[in-house]
Length: 347
Image (cartoon, rainbow, N blue to C red; front, side, top):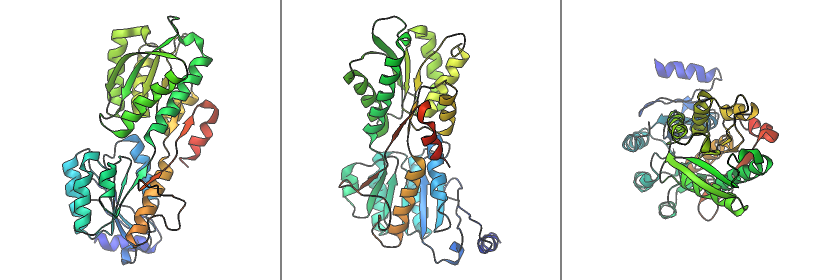
């Protein structure tokens, strides 16, 4: 009965995309139910990651061109491995994998190779040795260090424009760092390059705290609560590897009396998700760095679609593969002055 309903909806021209959790969740769009469109299996490391929800939405917008089977790996690598086996058994012609753990790429590649399937990794980058080990493996993402450099540039410009933020007048930025998942290439690069960029600009820094918030707003709030209890007004800047943790920090700061009666704390993040754009517009957040979910999702689909049809992955697209077998979607620094650029990315 479910297949009949899907077929009827497809004839009516509606777009249906599978988004179920576990190893389930499948759907097709347009004439996909007739079997004349490629079938692509997609895993998302966890659906409730703010940024990845927008990448997933961008992928799913293409459901009229292919039959998509999209699954939630629930931040469990063992579950994702099982999901890949299930996707292969369902006859997908290409895999698009947002790894839970980048170290698991070799295991996924082994499964893809055994089934002679192309695999497009995205957002969490495998090692070059893994990508180069299989001729049908590619990556879509960003240049991790670029986001850290841009975040550092935002910090430099804002700090120079607001000398009053140097509360103790020592010429240093006393900062706390909300770090993403340990070992994640983006977390490591953003942590390093944001501070390196500030120091290269001639600004001295003093790290008061650096702990992982695992990309999570709740953990970001909990860490900020603890740091405020420990350091109070000694903190002069909050730097977060992503917006979710930055938003959690802002919740904590608001609850502790900041952003009113002249009490302010600068906060920067990365991703420029819609909730962060609201905070920037309202003056609670200094800036963020646009991690272009729309174009990353489009690139993932385009490469997987071409590969599923047996074409070169970038054939007929705007995307360019580097020698590292990767498509790099550029970042954009976002402040109140250019919010429109990030807002356009979500239309």
